[in-house]
Image (cartoon, rainbow, N blue to C red; front, side):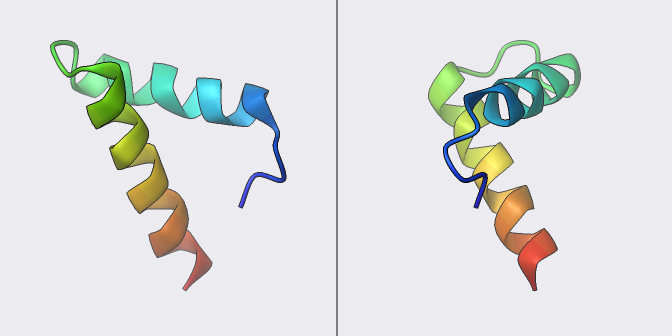
Length: 41
């Protein structure tokens, strides 16, 4: 999806953290993944 672009993943996690400040890193990564998968459709 991001072709191992860690920066893109970290930017996504940072953006999600603004909306979900108490979420764990795992939850944020799952939300980023869900958004990427939805955008691919």
